[in-house]
Each structure stands twice: as structure tokens, then as C-alpha cells.
Amino acid sequence: MEPVVSTDNKKSANPLQQLDAIDLMLLRRHYRDAAHAYFQLLDSLAREWATTSFSRSDHHGDENYAMYEICERATRQWLLILSSDVDLAKLNYTLFIANIGMVHAILMGTSQGTLDDFISALHRKTGGNYQISDFLRIVLAWCPNSRIGFDIFAYYSQAPELIMAHALGCVSGIGLISEESNRHRNKAIDFLITHRDSNIDKLGAICLSSAVLDAWMRCSYAEHPDKHKVKHLLNRMIQRGFQLSDKKAAAGKVPPVLRERPANRPLLVVPLETFSGKHAMYRCYANILLACREHFYTVGLAGTKYYDDDTVALFDEFFDADEISGSDPRVMESIILSWQPDAVYYPSVGMAVWVIALANTRLAPVQAMSIGHPATSMSRTMDYVIVDEGRVADGKAFSETVLAMPHGSNRFVLPSGSQRVAPIMAPPADGIIRVAVPSISQKLTGSFIRALRRAQQALPGKLQYVFFMGTRSVYYAATVQSLSRQLKHIECHGELAYNDYITELNRCHLHAGTFPFGGTNSLIDSMRQGLPILAFEGEEPHARVDGDFVRRAGLPEKLVCHSEDEYVERLVELVSDLDQLMALRRYLVDEVDIDRIFLQEGRPECYAEALAALVSKKPD
Image 1 (cartoon, rainbow, N blue to C red):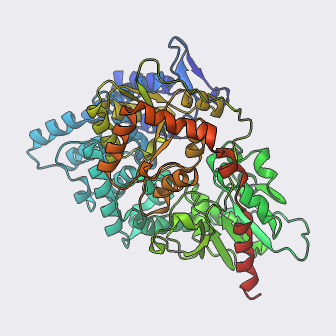
Image 2 (cartoon, rainbow, N blue to C red):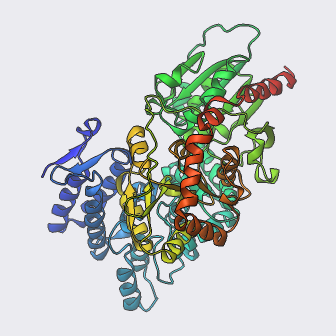
Image 3 (cartoon, rainbow, N blue to C red):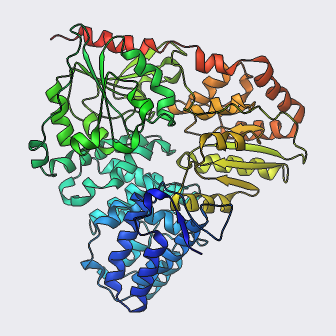
């Protein structure tokens, strides 16, 4: 019954071994040691195991099985620690705060989904008159799924770091699809917006934590109308965090010297977050970066684990950001300034803290971004956002100056090593329509899942939802548990290799587009396999891609919905009318060339030309 792990992590204690050690500490009543070991468990789950396959050798067929066990055992251990006589006020919460999202996921990944019973019992015992120890126990036991009436954000002044961490964890939460969790996320966004001008010095270590990055990255997935305004505070926290970091690191680094570039080519520096040949960002922006080489001398930067040979081939020069700077924004700033770039271009902002920090720094006369992470940066030093005009319904959605490219300019690519799989066009033998939801877990929202549930209730036994969540670790368990409480007849896949994903996708008949945050590459994948897209169109860029792709493919306009009721009605219609559904599928496979529209046409040179024009207008 030995755990099976990736070869990359065999030198690290696996989570089950860490849980065993904590159990022994608890058995011996060494509660303080158990609490600190628990915080180490959270950190290792976030760092070593969040993207690593992990399973038990005696459980075949589901590599994520052990994650349910981890959630149940870790929740029981946390409850024992909170119920003990350990002085919670004297614990070091740095790792707990940094990994607050992992705590939420562990609790939500259990069969109960919360520690509400513990909180309610403590409330009854104290009559609501909390001593500091009782208050800390409630705060540490709380998670976004909580159904009790405890307003955690009202206690900010009593425990600023812990309450702020919970707010960040709610904003960055995965699997927040219940009515309660969605409400808590919206309250957390209101809280962060209200505290945008707070004295962040009193927050200490949280300014340097991954909790800030997670909230910055995932706030775009929320349903709150002002969700991007939280970045005002998050940008300040990130900037302050690195002002407090070690200044000696920058002084001790010798900047790498660039090769001599042609005199007529300005220098373009491109910080990359995640950009390997199989990643969604590469699929969206590889052709744009290649086009930039016609106008610029291009220098790329990315962390060690986040690029490959395909990435390096896009640039004139390329540097490993970890090797030259440790991905320390203070060091990276010094290096880039020494190169004196004419422009800095960010294909995405939001997936790496050092890139967010740089995006809030003046490094070049021209600084521009694309919407690889499709929303405004709210940065005062980001000059422009370059975006397809079809994504822009309201320029007020951006703090940057909008440069709208001609519709359909971009040209996408398939992941390296991808194989074509012939679409399966036979009607379902069992009469059950398999509705694909190819969407990373954080795109699953309460209103979207409610729409799926309403359709399922209208057609009992006639459709099955197949989720492709691109998620591992305890986040997978939390998402599956959340979905299981809301829907029947579901099938869930974690992170799959691309060709395996296409094989599974090929067994489906229809693509249900998420909202308010839609897809991009997943839409192309589905249409190549003959799956029509049911889209929900909104005002923001990330809510407009689905509808745009439906129209570009020539699918009927009625597949583009503008309300939840319309979405449910159309989904029920498509599942009920097999002839209509099969006609749409045959159209995608036999009558339209999806590869030509999305992978061959377009003019990504427009993006490079727009950047070059900006540089040429700037005075020396």
C-alpha cells in the first residue's frame, strides 16, 4: 500500500508520511509541535505536491484518490489541534497565512465540507462572549463553505493578518460554487475594496505571501461586478512586500550582458509567467512573439519550471529568471534597467508574483500587456493593453489605454506533440448526452453550476456533465466534493496530458461554456472534435471570447446566450433535440474548417506593429 509519487518528488516527504508524523505528535499530546508540523504540511502541499501526481499503489484508476484521504485526515488533525489546550496566540502563522487557500480546500474537500459543528459548539459554550483563545479557534476553523452566521470580516481589527488572509483565500478560492461560498467571496471582495487604502505595514508577512498572488490571479473568476478593484490593494501589498525584502540581493548580482543587437532594432523585454509549449499562454501568444522579432530585438525571461525549448526558440535571447535573479523582482528590476529596453511587453500578468511586481514598476518608456490573464492590471505604470477589438465592449473595463487590434488578428497554435483524433460522430448508444465542461476549476461559479443543475432537473437521466478541471492535489478533491453536492451524474477529470484530454473530450457531444469567465483554447479543441459551443456573452473580455468564436465558426447566433434563463433553455433544447445537436456537430466536422479559421488565418503581425508604432512615437 505504498504511495506512488512522481520521480521529481521522491526526495520529499509525501503528504501521507507527514500526516503519519502529525498523528504521532497528537497521540503524544505534543499539540504545539503538531500545529507547526501541520503548517509545514500545508506548505509542502502547496509547493511540492500541488502539481504532482500522487496516489496509493493499491487504488487503481484514480490518481487523485489519496487527495480525499489527505483532506479527511488533515481536517481531523486540525480539529484535534484546535480542540486542544495549545496556546494558539503564540503560534507562528506565517505558513498558515501564505497557504490559507490550501486550508480552505482541505476543509471543503471532506464529506462535511466545513468545521461548522465545532464553531457552533464553541459559540454555544461561550454564549458569543469570546476570549482571545476562543476567537482564534473560530477564526482558524472557518472556511468559505461555512453556513453559520459568523461575519468573519467584521473582526479585522482584532486579527488583521488572519482576517486579511481569509479574505484573500475567499477571493482565490477553488470550488466556491455553493450559495454560501459565493456570498463569502463577494463579501471578501467588498472587504478588500473597502480596505484598499489601509495601512498595510501592520499586515507584516502576508505582503510577501503567495496568498496575495493567488488572490490577484483568481479575482477575475469571481462574479462580483467590481472584482478587479481588489488589485488596488493587492498591488500595494506586493510592492510593499518587496520594499521590505532584502536589498542586498540586488546589490550582489552582476547583470548579464546582452549580445550586440542590430542598430535598427529597438530592445523589447518580455517577462513570461507560464509559457511552455503545451501551456495555454503559448498557444495564444507564440505567433505574436515571433512576429515581434521582425521589429525588435527580443529578450525573454521565465522561471525555471515555466518554459521549455519551444519557448526559447521564440526569442533572440532568453534568460532563466531563477538563475539570473532568483525571480526576485528587486534583482530583476535592476537587471532590466541595466539593459535600457525601449519597451516591455507582458503577454499575461497575474500568474507569477515577480511579474506582477515588475508590472507595477517603470522599466521602459513603453509598457504594454495583452490579456493572457484577461483583465486590467490596475497598475499605474502599465501604459497600454493590446487586445482584439471583439473582446472590448467597454473601454472603461481597463485602467490602461486600449489598443484594439482588427478582429481575428491573432492566430493560435496547438500544443507541441499533439495528435489529431478523428471525431466520434455516432449518436450516443445509451441516449445520454455527455456535456463537456473543459474548464479549470476556478472558472466554475455558483451561477454557472446552478444553470447546469436546472437543466439536469428538467431532463432527469438524459445528460451527464463531464468536467475537465486541469486540477490536482487537494484542490481536485475540494472541487469534486463541491460539484457532488450540487449535481448528479457527473464525471470528473483532473489534469490530463493533452492527447489524453482530447481522447476523453471526443466521447462528449456538446460544450457548455462557463460564465462569467469563458474559454479560449478549449473552444478550439471542442469544435475540432465536433462539439458545438453553448456560450454566455457578457461585457468583460473574458466573457466575450465564447460568443465571438461561435460566430467566427458560423454556428447559429442562438447559441450565444445573455442570461442564465436563456442559457438553461438553450441547453435543455440542445439535449432534448438530438437531430438538431447532430446537425450542428456534422456542420463543424464536414462543412467548416476550424483549423483554417483559428490556426491558419489571422495576422498576429498587427500586435507587433502596434508595439513598434508606440516605440517610434516616444522621444529618446
